[in-house]
Structures are given as C-alpha cells and as structure tokens.
Image (tube, rainbow, N blue to C red):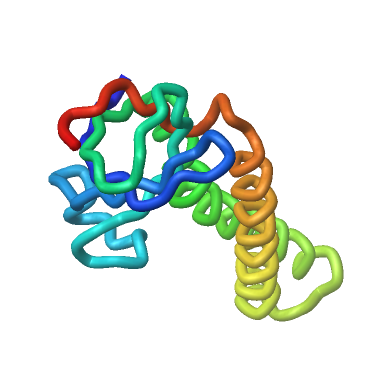
Length: 138
C-alpha cells in the first residue's frame, strides 16, 4: 500500500475530500489539474473532520491500473487503429497514410471515451478509493 498525508477539507456520506501536496511521483506527470495540490476522495471510516491532517493509503495495483488506462491505453488504441486503417487502405485501394491516420485518430478518440467510462465506474466503487488510516493532528 502506498501511504500519503493530506488535509481533510470536506466530509460527506462516509467520504472525505483530502488536499494533498504533490510529491516526487507527480512531478513529471502533469496530469493533475493543479500544480501544487491535488484533491483526493478517500473512504473515511475513522471519522476524520475538516481541518485534520490524516494519513491515507492507496492500493498500488489500483494506481498502476489507472496509470495504464490513462497513459498506455490511448497509445495502444492509436497504434491498433493505424494498423487497421492501413489494412483498410489495402482492401479498398485508398491512400495508405490517410487511412492509417484516420484509424489512429478514430481509435484514440474511442480510447478517450473508454477512459471516461472507466473513470465513472471507478468513482462508484468504494474498494477502489484510498482509505484514511489515521488522524495525525487536529
């Protein structure tokens, strides 16, 4: 389990919104919307309240799955689309580069839709969310 610390900013329905400072794992990524802080939604089984610093844990398998879906899946989809577009051009006698680019773009967009669906499914699952382990200070 990967453990992090952050500040609880809101609590609602057994979940806590935690403001987390960026760390070494995030420095080269740039995928998060903020350059200094990231908001994480974690399961709040211990009753943390806004203003408290907490330690929470994330399953590394979930982090790796998310990273694969967000970063690798679109590249693989574009590559598959380019190959399929190339094969389509051979079959219909069209221009190879146009169909390869069209296939890559089409499959890339499909992968973005798949990522959006994946995100919605993960957001609904309590087991995929980080869990607050302890309250560090009030």
